[in-house]
Image 1 (tube, rainbow, N blue to C red):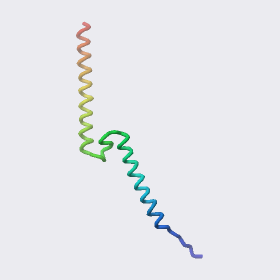
Image 2: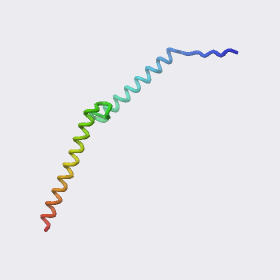
Image 3: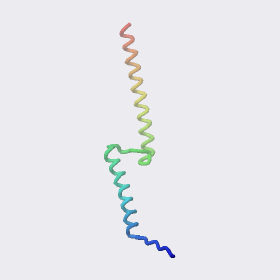
Length: 78
């Protein structure tokens, strides 16, 4: 007995287009909801690297400020 496979190519095309639209919508919603220009390295790899370096510098300066304040506090209590 011969088997016949029926394929609805219009349905497959529609499903493929729907999946692409859903993916694009998900990306757009992620970008809008985060409020960030760069959500991941794939958005802007160079920008992400610069932002990471700035973040590291800010954290280092914040810690240096805390250390200076601790030193001032110690000097004032003695």
